[in-house]
Length: 364
Ligand code: UD1
Image (tube, rainbow, N blue to C red):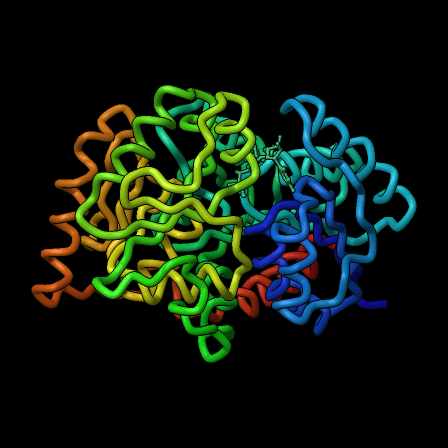
């Protein structure tokens, strides 16, 4: 009987990546697709299934929002019940969210072989929620699929007992596949920007949980020499509402509702530069040849910085944003380009499926 995989995911970027992984796993065995429901708003969940043309999940666990403990334990408890019921040959998890950790723990405690896609990334801040999640999952998975050579090399140093494969980044697979379906960015902008525009997103707790910092970053974005458009993650909107600081325009910055995957790619491709704290957008800008400025103290995607595609600005130094944006724009206008293959060429999901087949054959 072919192996059955449980593929567990639950946030916006994971739904995107899971779409490619699911398709390739389905070619070698049955797939039980489990969406934990960590993200549940239409723009962050249902819309992505529609846009990517993937089947709805087989199970939707309705975990929703909560504290880290509430969210992770709800995923753990509900996934455990499901895994007991279906007894898959292996569980596949993606990335570094609370859904990733909860599903991984459920599998590991039931002694079900676990594969981690997007393994081996690290941040210096060991108490970052995502860093805790990825270190824990990398410690218990038997198959570690790294998105690039540096993550794979790190895993070889950390885990001599695991199967480690540099598969490349599955996010590029999905991007490559969608490039010819992107809408016209001019039709997506809330107001015309004839001189070019910056596309921005901010959602990380480091910024949204500190109202003064969030305000400083938004003010800095509004004071840049180009019109800027920020697609608001619900967490950022909630933070602004709670502080009584939500408004549609701040200087040259316009806040707009969250956008779908295709719209986000289109707005990125049409932008003069991207300003973000999202790991996904950093790579999408890099692949699309658009300069990025990342509002974080550090990035797990160090190659994008080394190649000149990305530049870090610490949130606490939001005043430096204008200079960083200008310098990225100058480099770009001067014709800067970069090698776009640091995380593979967009064939990662097939590599994940091949690695999983070989790994399961060896371990049974
Ligand atoms: C999560 C991941 C983060 C990932 C991001 C992708 C963790 C610890 N963090 O962050 O690594 O980069 O997803 O987007 O798992 N909310 C809604 N509607 C939704 C979902 C969330 O309104 O559909 C609001 C709620 O107020 C919620 C807040 O956003 O409390 C945060 O959501 P949560 O899932 O905890 O984390 P994200 O910030 O989305």
